[in-house]
Image (cartoon, rainbow, N blue to C red; front, side, top):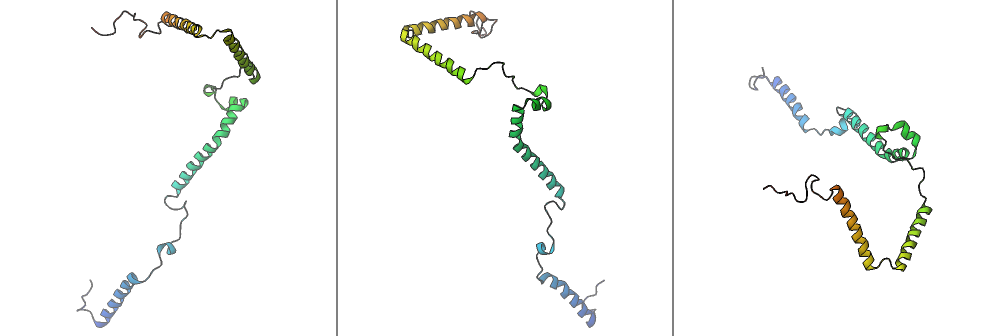
Length: 168
């Protein structure tokens, strides 16, 4: 047990004061800051180093996938052998090219022929307001006949026009 200052001898008292002064001096002394004393750790060191590795790996994976996507898509779209080898058949939604497709020149010629034909019909007078109204009425009759024939104009195909839809 520690003695009180009254019970100590002079030598003991001086020794206790020196020890106490030494302890108090540690609070007042200018110390270097912790960042100078403590060595810096790298980003992948320490308790969270593995987490940083995992986050870096995930980020680099997504970045690479994002950058490769356009090139891979072009390869899939244009290279039939690559598509057949690496894309499963249930996921392949590509359409086969028809045996014969019109060229731009052929489409252009057809459009020019159609324009010439319409111009000739207009010169002959086939597009007068009366004839246009007659063509529209024929179109309406045809559409009406078709919809009534299949019941597409009805709310429910099992109901006739006479049936009430309201509950009585």
